[in-house]
Image 1: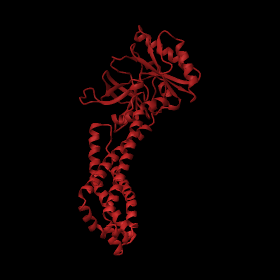
Image 2: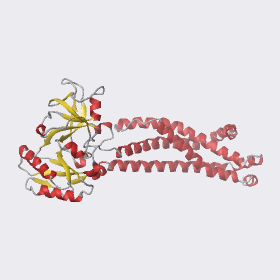
Image 3: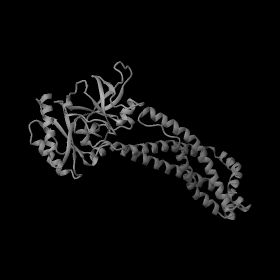
Image 4: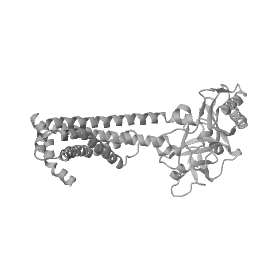
Length: 420
């Protein structure tokens, strides 16, 4: 019955809106822009929150890294010997479960660590771009240090560990890839035992890891496409990162002991005991600082837009109530109930917001497509996102108009007529 009564009021509502074309159009446009902006902003916030919560695939609670630079005058052979000696000393530090060296570490990003990457091809004469992957220099201790799961194949053997420099064409005797990378290289079958092609030549896949996030964190699916090569990274002009896994989450004494073990072999390295030691918790915080700031900013912008839209609806509704006091008084005199007046203003608001929502959904989809072209990591926004935003705006509109409508319904008929 209430629905039928509301429908019967559509004609006078449309006639009233036609007399206030500019004000109606402004509210419709405001609702449309709010829906377009908030839908995309909240979608970005949601994707960032998912991005922040992604696991690296490692035992983050027990991992820390040490940044180690080399003094001038050492060659690649000396650095390789230093790395092997350092790792042996670190593995004997009380509280250290295992350790290895690499050119980067999970979530190292460009602020804390560098990374190596490669384009993997499936054929030696392949002319198209190969599959992009991030590289970890690794040894037989890497899997245990990171606490990652080897789901297929085998680990590296000690005799397979070589060296790689900044200008070397990487051509290892075998590689271990993540399952994400394996599925992209060989979507129709197992990658284990298959041969892929690096710039330096053919390379067999000898193992598959469950997951391992790369040294850089990006908002796209490829940051889990990592691989291990059996090598120590040696560059006299660059740094090497020592990754250590502890037996306890209280890392301070272990960190102090590890630094002491390295400093005992002084004269060959440059250490920064403060800025050069990073726990995985700190690495996660630093890597995702921008995401957290962006999510907070987008959330604030969305909230302010919703408040502005609600304020606009309240202001316009209050203005219209003041302009229609005589009309309301006449209707009340003819027997209109409080419910009739409330339904009139709520139905009117429903139509105005509905017009804005139709336009807003179109603008939201177009804005998302534009953002995808400018910011390529942003995924396609599902249609349910603007639809949920539409539902939110409809509810917000009904709440915003409730106050002015309630005020209009309470005006006595005689007072309403006399004030005019």
